[in-house]
Amino acid sequence: MRVSMAPSNPISRTVTSALSLFSGLDIESDRLWIKQNFPECLHILWQIVEAVAGPPRTSKALSSATCSKGTMLGAEIVWLMAKPNQLFACSVPAVALQPLLVLGMVTEVVISTTINCYRFLCLDSPKLAFLMADSEKEVVLITGCSEGGIGYALARAFASQGCLVVPTSRSLSSMKSLENDPRFFLQELDVVSEESVRRAVANTLDKFGRIDVLVNNAGVHLVAPLAEAPMSAVEHIFDTNVYGPMRLIQSIFPHMVVRRKGKIVNIGSVSALAPGPWAGVYSASKAALHALTDTLRLELSNFGISVISVAPGAIRSNIANSSAVSYGKMPEWKFYKPFESSIRARMVVSQGPESTPAEEFAKKTVAMVLKKNPPAWFSYGKLSTIMAILYHLPLSIRDYIYRLKF
Ligand SMILES: NC(=O)c1ccc[n+]([C@@H]2O[C@H](COP(=O)([O-])OP(=O)(O)OC[C@H]3O[C@@H](n4cnc5c(N)ncnc54)[C@H](OP(=O)(O)O)[C@@H]3O)[C@@H](O)[C@H]2O)c1
Image 1 (tube, protein in one colour):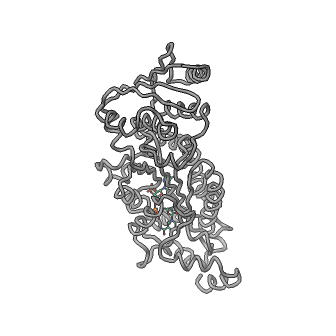
Image 2 (spheres, helix red, strand yellow):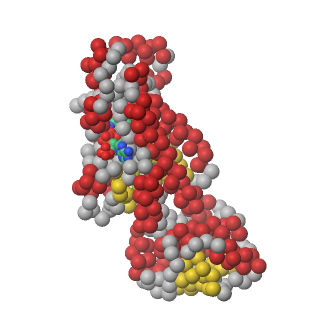
Image 3 (spheres, rainbow, N blue to C red):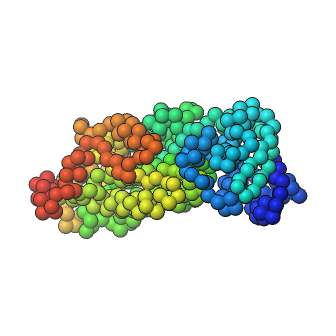
């Protein structure tokens, strides 16, 4: 891919020198060669254009720009050009440019900003045409998508809404049924491993050039009395349910910031609203996630990123099975032995015959997430209303109700 640039004044020359500092960009007199990682280079280019020309004038004009949603290889070129075009009356209308790009023709475009003028020569390719077709679709990365769980149902629901979905899980074999469907780009991702997170995010950006929606869904349950729960198990729950989402967010945030666009969905739990006996570690981890989400929502809104807390009620999934596996690794209780049956019963509370099917929960959640202005909080599923009521009750009444039950 070659981009030519005509430095026409001191500012332009400064930009040109600045560009040469970045790997993948090489300046030869007035020619700028992009040698590698093209989408990343365009992010850098756009940052520099904004730094020199100032931020876009109105976000409304931006969101109505023809290609404002595009960030893939082909669309990025248009995006870079379409923004000034929309805002600063560039000489080539983006709408006229799009068919030329799609046809794979050589296009020369002048980008005008109020203070500078760049000339980009885009040598197009069939790959661009292919990418253009997908440039309007939301790219959604979801953690914990093993078959039978909420993540899997979310992946299918996002795909049914025309999104490009990156379902991830610790093992590709747990998502086998999605394997041959072109709407999915499966990735292995273990949320407790920074290296695994980095690799899956990099693969996704290489493939699509962007991530529009991150769904932090992966989670593990633990049933154990707090006073006897092994600390290693407590740490594992927090590592997965709290630090896992943080790892994903910190890895994806820089890419969302550059585009000033993105949604982060954190799957918490109604159990954090009114923590009862035997699932204290799990409830605390979800309460921590809700708290992080509340802060993130405020901190990230400055960058055009929405952050949403989703609190599922009792949803049919594999959670009781995985809970049973971790319970099997617990030591014999010393003081809580007489409560063994009550403790065990906590494992299946969310998996009764009236639990909400994961597909129903996923459909509602996806419809909410894909809204232009999604709500900050969304709770759905069996028991979600009861838990919301318990949350508001005086603690003495809540404790009384729990004592009756456990
Ligand atoms: N089901 C409910 O009633 C309910 C209620 C409230 C909240 N939630 C929350 O909803 C989310 C989904 O749970 P679910 O009900 O669908 O349970 P699930 O069927 O057990 O699914 C949990 C998913 O998380 C994955 N996971 C666990 N540790 C991971 C790690 N280190 N890295 C990556 N993935 C990991 C699991 O992968 P493996 O298959 O490899 O173990 C699985 O895909 C969880 O955050 C859960 O806390 C569920």
